[in-house]
Amino acid sequence: MSAVSNFAAGIGEAKVPRAFGVLGSGSSLELTDAMVNGGVAFQGVHHEASGAIMAGITGRLSGIPGIAMAIKGPGFSNMAPGLSACLMDGLPMIAAVEAYPPGTDWAVRHKGSDHGALAQAVAKGRVQLSEKTSFGDVAAWAKAETPGPVVVELTDGDGAVPDSLPAVDDVTEVIEAIEASGRPMVIAGSGALRQGWGRVLSTLSIPVFSTANAKGVIDETLAHAAGVYTGVGLGETPEALLLAETDLIVGLGLRPTEVLATNLPKPSVNIDTLASADAFGFGTSSGPGIVGQALSALAEKEWGMARTQLVVGKLRVTMMNGGFRPAQIFEAVDRRFDGLVRGVFDVGYFCTIGEHAWRARRPDLCLMSGNGRYMGTAIPMGLGAALHDANVPTVIFVGDGGIGGPVAELKIAVQAKLPVMVVLLSDGGYGSVRTRAIRDGLIQSPLLLDQPSWLDAISGLGLPGVRVENMDGFNDALDLWRPDSGPVFIEAGFDADAYQAMTDGIR
Image (tube, rainbow, N blue to C red):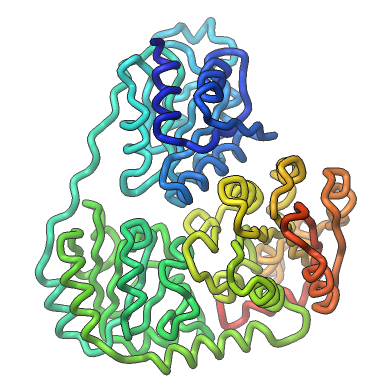
C-alpha cells in the first residue's frame, strides 16, 4: 500500500466526516480519490483559507481533526490565513498539501516555495508523508494541547511525529489559596472546555466567567454565569464590577492568547495541562492532577449569585437601549429558537456586543474567533458547522469587513440547502477602526464604504435576501425563515454614529 493510500485508509478508519479544499492534479487528487472511495465526503471550496477554517471547526465540533487540501506553493500560501486562524483559536485540523520531495533543487521548482518557513509561522508543525505516517499519530498531534493545524506534505519523507509536551507539576499552594479565599471567582478558558470541566463549573455557587473562545463551557443562562472576561472590560461590564469584589481569581485552562490584557489586579492561580501555564501573571500555576481537589474546594464557596444576576442583567438592558441595535437582533434570534440555535460571529463592534449578549447554552452554540479576532472567519466557520451538524439552525453574524473575502463560499449553503441564515450587521464601514480615526483626527475615507450593500451579489449566489433598518423588519424576516427551506440573507443597516456609541462603557 502506498503512503497516500495508507494515510487515506487511516482517515477513513478515524471516521473523519468530510474533507475540504482546492485540489491539484497530483497527490492531492490521489488522496481525495482514496478518501472518497473509503467513505469520506469531499467539499470543494472557493479559497483554500476557507477550507482550512471549515476543517478546523469540524475538528472542534467532532473531536476528530478535519482535513483541508491544497496544491504546493500558491495553494499552500492561500491556505496560510486559514491555518493561522486555526492556530490562534485552537482548532485541530490537518492540512494535506502537495509538495516537492526534500532536497529538490529550488532552481527547478515550478511553483516552488518554502513550505517549512510558512508552516513554522502558521501551524503546530509539519511532517512529510511516508508509509509509516499514521493518521492517528498526526491527528493526536493536532489535538494535543493547545490544538491547532498540522501540515502533512504529500511527498516522500521520514513521517516523524514529535512526542507531546509534558504536563506541569502539581502545586499544593493552589489548593491552599482557594481554601483561604472568601470570594473566589473563576475564569474558564478553552482548556477547561476541552477537558470537560464545565460540568462541575455549572454546579458552583460563585461567579464563573469564560473567555470568548470558551463561551458555553457553562450554560450562560445560569444564575452564576457572569459572561465573558476580556481583561479590558469597562465600567458597565460584569468583569469590571465583580473583579472589584473578589479576593481570588481562579483560572481554569486559561491561556494568555484568550484575553486582550493579562494584567490581573487581584491574587490569582491557574490550573492547566501545559508546561507554559505560568506564562502570564498568575501567582501560581499547577497541572491537572489537582483539578478535582480545586473544584471541590470551590464547591464549598458561596457568594455573588444575586450580584452576578444584577450586573449581567444591567448590562443587557444597556445594550438593548438606544434604538435599533445588534443586541436586539441577537435577542430576537435567541428567542425565536428558544436558545437552540448556533450563533457564529465575525469580528467588529457587533462582536464586542455579541460576546456579552449572546447566551450560549452549550459550547457548540457559539463559535467565533475569540483568540485571533480574525476578520472573515464567520462564513467558513458557520458553513463548516452546518455541514457537520445540520440539525441545529446556524445564524452567521458578519460585518462590513468580514463578508467580502469568503462570500463566494455561500454557494455551498445553496447547493447543500443548509439551515443557515446570514445576517450582515452594517454601519457602512469599519466601525471599530473608525473610532481611532475620529478620536485622533485621522483620515476616515478609507474606512467608509461607498456601496456597503451585498443584496445584489447575494441574490446572484442564489440566496433570497432582504434589507431591514428596524426591529419590526428584522422580526418579520426572521419569522418567515424556515431552516429546512435552505439559506437566507438579512442585511441590517444601522446608523453609523449610534453604532459607534453602543460599546461605550463596555470596551
